[in-house]
Length: 325
Ligand SMILES: O=C(O)CCC(=O)C(=O)O
Ligand SMILES: [Fe+2]
Image 1 (cartoon, rainbow, N blue to C red):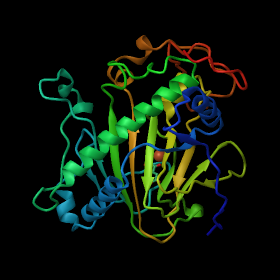
Image 2 (image 1 turned 60 degrees about the vertical axis):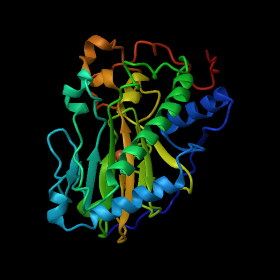
Image 3 (image 1 turned 120 degrees about the vertical axis):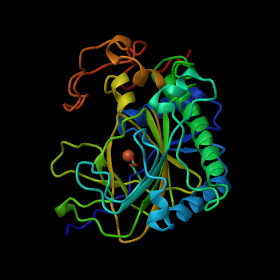
Image 4 (image 1 turned 180 degrees about the vertical axis):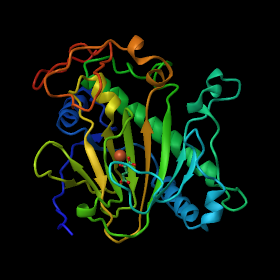
């Protein structure tokens, strides 16, 4: 088995209590261009709620498999996904998960769309209060995502509320996932990981873990040999990473960085929320988004085509200042 590298990566910390949004945007821009991973603090999600989520999550995963299978994941990607069902680049090892998404409100035409269908829940007699805790937490994560989106918009030289419109984040497609990695050891030589190397597909992901180390990122996937660095969890902070949607919109300026989870023999629990926005999924991308020329090698070759958001036609590069609006 290959020796695991223990290097820990220092990351930018975005403080949502900082009133100087432009100052936040400047340091966030640098973090987004560097690796797209950062921490967020002063988000106002209570520790009690987060602890309750992890407790309830553990209760669910501790249920007998036959009970968990009653909430089996359906075609709209909601519900329970047993271990070894999800294969990414290499097989994920002993990872089980539970998915929930945003639901359309009563009489909302969006309700008919697959991304807004009803969730699947464990039996409330078996896990009382479970649904309410998760719905509450999901709303809180969305609130934080929207606050981060304002600063990301400023970092892209757009209006702070650019993403917070009814077409975009006011009706977001947002999934929350509870994850449980059950013991086991990763073995790179056999391609066995807690979670194989991947980038996230959405706009951004917010992640909380139970503190057991495992998440690693690879800033340069073309470097040989690849260098993987640990991203530890920090008390009171969430880990945020940008996904492929934002990398495309920004013409590759902002990074959706490859990451994976190593299993180190211990059980590990995490919860993440992946935020998409509604328009890119519900309408034809090519008619909504203007195709632009690729910017040198900034866009990875596995992207079929490059689309940038119409408003993001020219993003200040490197040291150029952000004007704010
Ligand atoms: O569990 C983790 O720490 C991260 C999992 C992850 O990257 C994902 O689910 O996309
Ligand atoms: Fe991920």
